[in-house]
Image 1 (cartoon, rainbow, N blue to C red):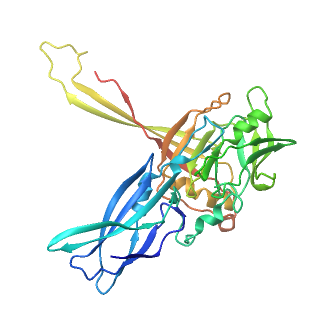
Image 2 (tube, one colour; image 1 turned 135 degrees about the vertical axis):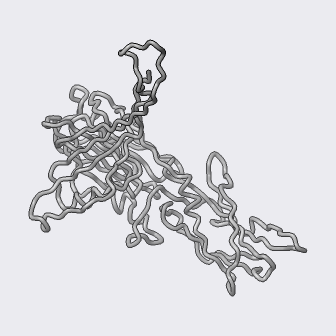
Image 3 (tube, rainbow, N blue to C red; image 1 turned 90 degrees about the horizontal axis):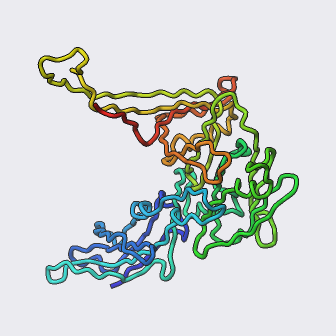
Length: 388
């Protein structure tokens, strides 16, 4: 019995793209032959997540196996503002695969598991991310390390926030070289990280460091900030600019946070006119009245009232590059509305769903006019009133 792994995924892969193994066996001529694929995931201990059986193909001794559908069910996300810096343990999964064989022995299907382990020791890893067809390659994540790419966002401009808004940024560091965060606004403030062994994706709350560095009545100051990640020698590995203004808009601000395709978090303030609508659904029945009845007695009676809130919001004018960046907001499976609590380090976040079913990437050159982004969202809950 011999299983050969001709090719396997990189040690670090996006969970929502193919996680492909190419294996072969010297025993495919056995009756009723199947490849056995045992997928183990690391929880508090190694757990058998799935056992898969793949029949051999005619005139072939090998098979290609994609286990992404198993692994992606184990990666989620971490969206937390109670710590300034922490590993996104939920967005990373360690796994390994045991390959075996199954075939008939004297008319009975017999399984021979655990013939070949891949990797032979330790683990491979997947992350809660996905890359489009033209962008994906076997080593795509190598280009998104902190020292190659910076934070896990493709925003083409500085992040614009109002004073007191919360910000969450993510980065990917499989080499463990990130050691410090540096906040610059005229003067600079540097703080040191403590990395967690075996964790390679981290979330940072830069607004926490902005509070700590420049206190001003429980609000970080207005102005331009530069947030840098440093190595042990204080070399900058990546940075992002944040522009802070006072909350002074004419309309109510809607601040959204969403999970992007890279496995990081983006956010944006919608500051222009907004419209709130309520869709009201009523269920009634016709009540039988006792005789004699009064005209104040209720005949058609409402026994259930369901209210669905929908909000339509608008951005300020945006560039063509920002219009491309906004696509991920419309397609993201995780979007949150930040309730304005400027004096609190732990804001209220409300889960919402974007209801738009299409998105046009507008370009100034096409219409010769500035454009903004309009979207609608529902809350993930319905409201109800009392029945009689």
